[in-house]
Image (cartoon, rainbow, N blue to C red; front, top):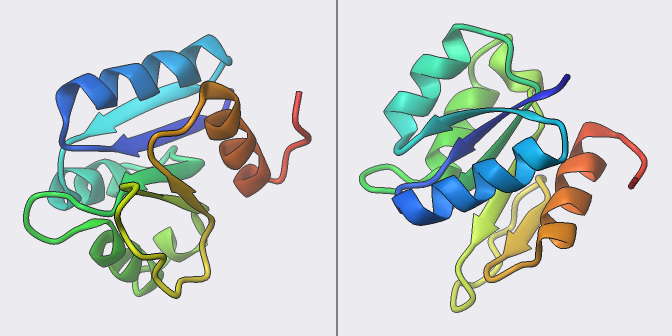
Length: 118
């Protein structure tokens, strides 16, 4: 079972994302900000990070930058969630714009993991 770290500061959104991923047979870890996410990542056993771009303090892009500077975190796949009004940043990771459907979320996660869509 693949483990997804969901990084989202809005509790209700975090729970919906976690429930959706768990229903699709993923294990989920939760974090509300960049520092909590880094702490969980350093413990290991995370196969993908799904992070909101706008977090309190340093945002999702800051988390991505820190991961890319830190072996072995630099190899963990990453999907960045954007609010509907946000401009698409130039980044080498997959992006998904809110609001999105459960099927779009699962497709983005599976693609980032290199899995076929089921």
